[in-house]
Image 1 (cartoon, rainbow, N blue to C red):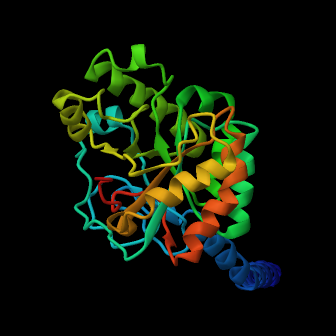
Image 2 (image 1 turned 180 degrees about the vertical axis):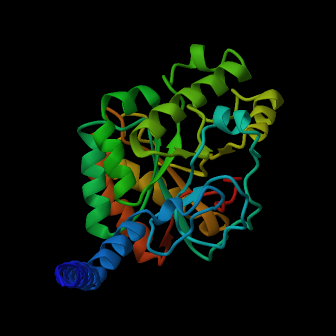
Length: 310
């Protein structure tokens, strides 16, 4: 009898523990079900914020992003008014045995298309003022930056990037006697500036512009080196003349006069500067924008779709 009662007690205790464990598990499952919508929402938010790096083998081109990112694969890029950046620098691509070549694209020739470009920044007085004006008019432009300036003013570079403007490589120190010793010294300055840009925004540009322009500085060796390393050299076909002592009204008049050449309307690439001493460019910019707006021009950023200047 004693053993029977003991067995009954043991069995009741086991049943109680079993029921207790079931209840505990049920509560946990109910809590997880209740939290599931929040988890899904948070994951969706995280995924949305990181769409530009979708996977290791992809090129990100999403309408919610304000740039196109090249990674491991070459993918045809549809026409878009977006800057193009690369996940890897040239040496990184070489070490990973990745192709340096860019996807084939059709040049974009519009009826009336303008690219506003600014060289030599970022600079703490003029660049933010130009960004303010561009923001006011809801216009995207292209900034060819110098590596030494990027080192000094990383926050301004971040602003250029975050506001959807295109960034291009304009050498490391902009000193001609250093830069144009050979095609290799030129490339090394591009590499150096790529590193500086990537350390700040996470990516590097594929477009570049030679200080002073390629004419008179480039030989065939330079062009071959750029092509072999996947850079797109960007010139200009309208000079604002702001590298001189021109006043704001003269700068606007310079552009207006050159704009009479209607064969340039399909890809009007305007050279301006945002470096130190170019306050007159800042003053002229609203009138320059008005000049193009009044003529019905479309404003675009420089990308690999931008046609050659000439």
